[in-house]
Image (tube, rainbow over all chains, first blue to last red; front, top):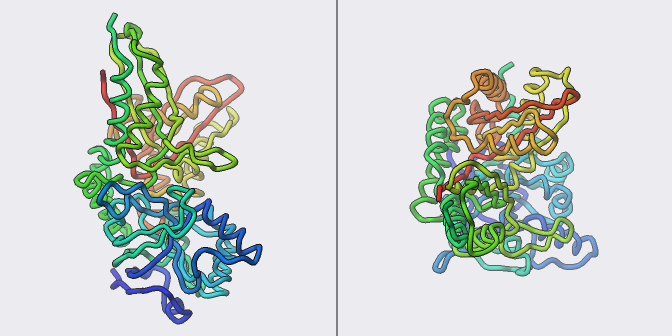
Amino acid sequence: MNDFILLKPPLSDEDIEKLNFGDRVLISGFIYTARDAAHKRLFDLLKQGKDIPFDIKGQIIYYVGPTPPKPGQIIGSAGPTTSYRMDVYSPLLIEKGLKGMIGKGMRSKEVKEAMIRYKAVYFAATGGAGALLSKRIKKSEIVAYEDLGPEAIRRLQVDDFPVIVVNDVKGNDLYIEGERKYRKE
Amino acid sequence: MREIDVKIITEKVAQLCIEANTDLGDDVLQALDRAIEQEESPLGLAILKELKENAHIAKTEKIPVCQDTGFAVIFIELGQDVHLVGGDLREAIQEGVRRGYREGYLRKSICHPFTRKNTGDNTPAIIHLEMVPGEDIKVIVAPKGGGSENMSRVVMLTPSDGIEGVKRFVVQRVKESGSNPCPPTIVGVGIGGTFEECALLAKKSLLRPLGSKNPDPELAKLELEILNEINKLGIGPQGLGGRITTLAVHIQMMPCHIASLPLAVNIQCHAHRHKEVVI
């Protein structure tokens, strides 16, 4: 098993270029959450040439809608949601400077092309491990769209948040390569 | 005739919603143990171990296993000798879901199909009500996540497609779903009946404890054949490559119309949550 690579956003092109599909990464620092409804709002604002509620340059977006925290808890269960539903919005966000996305499941051709062109990567976190992943989140604050409830944009402070590189800037895809490696005819 | 107050049903539903979401059943944990023994991919193995650790944290700290605490799917087997008092049974169930999702700090994931406005309390729950002999009420709560439900399908095959057509469609559905439904999955299959009944059969098949054998030997054989085909695909835990794509295939079958061969595939993620109680 590979050693872990440590990453701390904001990320530069150089940070991204050294990542390879299959790399196990631990992220520390700040990441942003957004899923279906928040993506639509971000996308619509950018399309109209307006500012979005946070500076997206060099940042990582985590596709998650956590459960509500109990009193005294930082956040509830917080694992990744399936990413393909964000595919229509992601290329524009990547063009505007987004460097990383955390989710689960394969991305579209358009997203993969945008990642290669503008230097970004796609990470997988373990789906259905929301209790485990919540332990790596040290702080959570709502940045925008509180009305969306679980879908609001949050800024999370994470510590050694475990992810795996699925798509790198060389055009590799761990979902395709992994399946090929273990397929039996 | 036995009298039961629907308030009890509200309480039980609320309690089961919380339990199901924080306490993954032993059948699932044992299936994960068997998968750990069989998985060949180091990354796949690491993920399976993570899932067990996750279940342990969820249970001991009462944190939901998954942030998608699901659509509340409730099966009620109502004994025909029960006389319900104290109000409307369906409303009592909805109130139980409302209470369970609020008091358990579970995510409210139900919204208007077009405006996407959240209903705010995870209702309406899906209620499958069945009359059975006796004077008991069995309540089953099976929260269902959106990611795996999205990968499910109903298809009306033609009779000439036969058993091979069924196998082909199920395996192909799992293949196309890839990493999306959070493998290792459980694949529920409904065969026969009508368009809506085969979907319900597929869902009901998921309620059978993991690791138990189908009582129909013909279906038990078919389940194993499909499982073996699926686990040759190489998708593996979380779709990152590996041996164990699916933990089990469960099939329920009933007769169908002479013109049809209805087939439903209901995919369930590894966070296979289901709790039940008999009142």
